[in-house]
Amino acid sequence: MPTGTRARDPHTTGSHAVRRERQPRTRGWRSVVLALLVAALVAGVLRAFVVDVYWIGSDSMQPTVQPGDRVLVGKLSHGSEPERGDLVVFDGRGSFAPLRSDDPWPLQALQTVGRWTGLAGSDSVYLKRVLGTPGDTVSCCGPSGRLVVNGEELTEDYVLEGDRPSEVEFTAVVPEGRLWLMGDHRSVSVDSRSLLGAPGGGLVRADKVIGEPVAVLWPLDRAGQL
Image 1 (cartoon, one colour):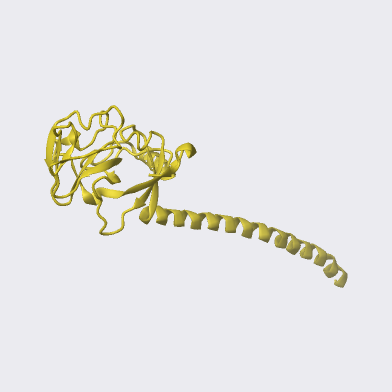
Image 2 (image 1 turned 180 degrees about the vertical axis):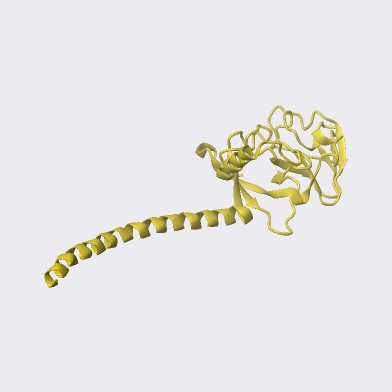
């Protein structure tokens, strides 16, 4: 019996040794998974409350932003109000876009992942320039063919070269809590002018603004502050 007991000890010790060798590998994988989960959580919190990345899919904001640009957007703090001339990213549902999508949920899920990773755009989020804030009267066009705000003609160096300030004549009075928004590539931009006859008259609710574009992240040859 003593001999049999000693014969089993090396086997038992060997099994323990195998387990001791495998445990660090298991702990290593757990550490990697935990680190990835923490990184995803931190990224989610940052993108929900601080900054986000949006892919630009149209040419309506040329030359300021080009199709294919990945733009870093700073979320507006509570109580912040966009000013005339600011670039803003906003949720266009209820004004620029349908209230809800008819796409099947798997496709909507893929679109959400694409937007979150910055690999795809959104059919309800837009980037435009603020031309009218609450209390402003915006019209086109003045004696020199330029946009007029509160009786003064604007000098708009950001408008795409060769474009007129507007092909459409209009006058809009901006009420409290609303914004008048236009693209920099005026001849192709679908913006507040395109919705003059729609409910709301092309005026977007200020509380629909998500944030302010602050920089182009990609492509690298265009990377820089906006």
